[in-house]
Image (tube, rainbow, N blue to C red; front, side):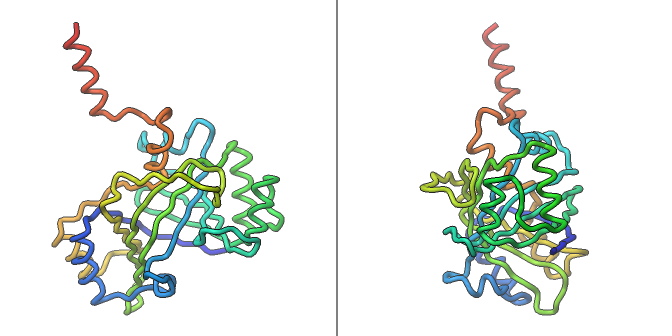
Length: 252
């Protein structure tokens, strides 16, 4: 079992900012192993997210509940095989603090769970994942796909930087759907910069954030995927509600 306890800061940047920021960051960091191995120096990430039939996890986030547990299955491969590695993840969040528990299983174990609702092998993460799915009547809802660049510091400071490109999603109940019709997220022309740290950011990283006037955003890939694929359950925005109110007043 792998446990990660850290803070996450997310920023939306344009392509010009991406090149400039990456150029500065590369003075202090190197590409991680996964990025170096990828053919175009960006590796695939696919995440299948779980929720209730009425999308309670999504609704809780919209109402500002920052104490949540997220269940997802993650793959770094596009094609299924019995031996493909798949991460089973429980992600808890309290404000900006995130703790992730994960374990890797084989494709054959994943398929058994999807068919029966039970993992053929057991450990703490798998037992809790299965328990939460049954207790809360959870099911896979959306699949999110993107390409990531990961960077790690040369001096072993305990933080990480990632750039996520081309985020898109589709309604799905499987990590490997046939002929999925993905939809690009609204920031498809932008890149998501994520800084993951267990403590205070190094001075040079703080300087870059100030230099480009970066403002942290709430960038839930799952939330955006629901808004793209399930318009029937998406809460109307406050701006829409206000404009609708004045439209009704004008018709009186």
